[in-house]
Structure formats: structure tokens, C-alpha cells
Image (tube, rainbow, N blue to C red; front, side):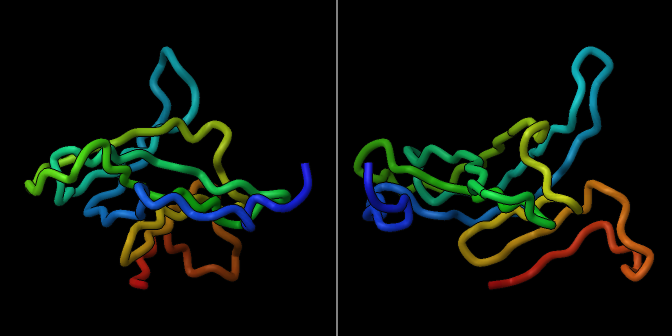
Length: 127
């Protein structure tokens, strides 16, 4: 198979969507690892929201996880709350994760910051 993944056409049914809240929950007693929870309000009742980690060849400082919506039907307009979850066992950068939505991103530090870092454990960035 020749070519690169980036050369393939983008899907028309999927888009990044905005989110309102990000939470990383600690491991429970019965299961190890952390759990990422992302929630917000979607503009269509039939929009299926998922968390999609970006693929990397080398371990990044912050592993990007996109908040993606896919229309499952014609697009029934309605403001509906959503909450999606994903285990972070295999998707952690050297320093943490970065949740990427349509208009903003939010970083979460999952490992101890460097001594030169002011110790910020959470950072939000608008796009």
C-alpha cells in the first residue's frame, strides 16, 4: 500500500466538536490506570461524540485526544448534553494529554512537571 494516511480525503460526516469540561479520574481499586471524561453540549440529537487519540511515531510531550462528532442521521437540531470517557493507559505523552475541540484545547499534566515549569497542572488554550 503506497501513500500516507494524511493524503487520504477527510470524512464529511465527522467534525471536531466543542467541550465544556475535562476530568481525569484516578485509578479505582479493581482497575488500574486513569480515565479521561469529557463533557459538553452537542447541537444535534443524532451526533455521536467520541474521543479519538492522534497517532504518533514518537512519544509526544502532550498526547492529543480529539473530541469528534459524527452525524448518524440527517442532523436533528437539539441541544443535548454529552459525556464520553476513555481509558488513558496507552495514550499519555511524556508530560500529559491535550484535549482538542472545535475552538479550544485543554492540557492536563499527568506526570510531574519539570523544575523549570511553574507547576501548572492544567492549562486551557483557545484556538
